[in-house]
Length: 159
Image (cartoon, rainbow, N blue to C red; front, side, top):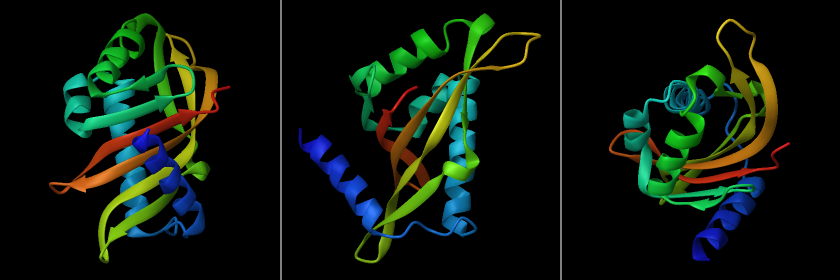
């Protein structure tokens, strides 16, 4: 329960503070990270990459799939997202929706809250990707050992 309270506090705080400018170094770094993270882990199913890119204490909250920790999240990706290469789910972020809110402790950047909308497609060989749904997301990334590590995820408003 405390993680949920923490996440809602972060969301509330993020709406009170200004997001970084979309041409700032931090925004561009997180936009690039988002693109790389989802291309490798979700679209290409590089599960070794995914395992290293998420926090040991990952908390993933999904409005249709419930709560998952790192172990159940990795299994879910393997068994659902990566199980059928003939009908492969693909994730694309809506570029104009992306927002980044820095998190500081004593003036030192330690993480970010990233919000946006992503679209999900089904990819079949020889066919155009077909849009299947959209959803909102909120990610909490921590700056750990000189890299962004995904710590908390809210995936909601799936339509």
